[in-house]
Image: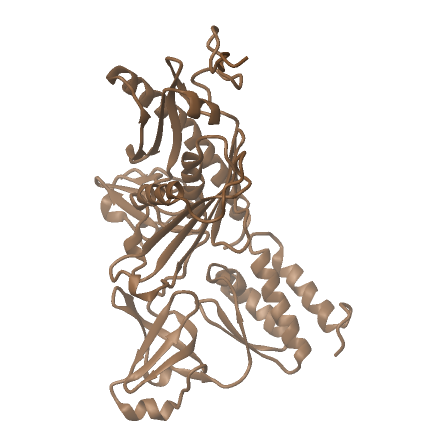
Length: 225
Length: 244
């Protein structure tokens, strides 16, 4: 079956990608047995399906994603958690004791896994996979830029962790929790995140982020220890 | 002086602003111009200047308007008070409310709303300077803003007005031609889908004239569509350098 794009080509909404309607993946739609792109992004083939990796856009939770949420409601059989923007996820617990054992209050932050996401809403894994976050700095970032923050096989995030000495938890939904040994180190980590968010599209970003962190930690930027 | 009528088109077929009948005004498109929005675009068609911004998908307010199976598409077409010769009072006039509706309906036919149930997608079209063809330029801008926001759409929408001025069928009417001409027909098309998403007509066309006008509009829309695609590609080509 012919494909009408080259790998990693930038495609636009409405662009014809394939003649095989069975190969329609993420970011595409089928019309009259043909596959077209529905968003602006890179065209690629994933698991034999034609996909478009969008440049921008809302975060759609996928099962298995790690997310950070803020508790907005406590119910007798679970919790409601805001994942930022329009997304509200539910944690369902069949056992009331479990709810009490977690002892979550409105406004507290949790780290959890996505279990299911669809028309009925977003559900997070219950049980041991939920981690309550008791301290740290909660920062938000545009979800589409999270892959850049993590970098190739975690190169960027590991560098930030190493350079600042902070412990960081990254939620795929755009929330990040930072816990560092000193306010200055936390400040450096937040600055790094803001820089990545602003310049996500540019090359050689890892190096610039590293320089920024070093100048802040080293006191060159005018911040005292 | 009083009896002298404005000539909208002269003997050689040159229009009041120096264009030929089948010529568009100079078009300028910029994408991603507003920081706080999820997607935005600026379209300048001659003296018509328009910003479009898209927010969402986000929570619906008031909440009871939310739809269980798809997103709500809100659209606001608004002219700034300084966009016209005589100050336009603040607030939405009847005309603006109607244009908001027709722009929304045109966009609804291309946006995949069912991907974001219980949310709303808000489109704001702000006319900075009006010189005819604001609804069509607004629609052109709005579809680009939607594409930039990463909202799944079946196709971009390109729009243009055609009309009849002193017996001639002309493309892309300016304000004077709109006011003193015989007919004005804004058309919006989703070119890939080959479907007309908006068509209005003020004045009269004979059957032959209508066919001719539609063909002319298609030609103009094709030109605008190419510019739209070019603008989007330019905006995102820098991204392709990034290591994902």
